[in-house]
Image (cartoon, rainbow, N blue to C red):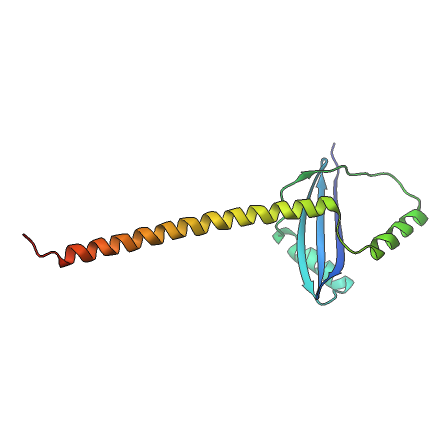
Length: 138
């Protein structure tokens, strides 16, 4: 039976505080990025998770190894200190977010291309109607 794991990393990036939700399931990892703005309090983050978690758009899953081994509490505390000192997000998360960004970009390009084609066709039809209107029957 596969285990599902989730993690939220909140860090300061430029003028805003950003949260990265990572979701691991069966050796696959997907991520979602959220901009909080001002530094969020613990209760605000908890509230956000309760109210908006299912609204998040997670990236497509990438292969990742999820380790679930027991650690010494002192080791866990040291690791947390290291992560707090190290600004940034995990490389797998970055890959997942980049993949999501590329997907959204291609979808947007396709929509605008179709919209431009429809616009050109509409203009062409308007010109044809105008021509027919000017043509005085013979």
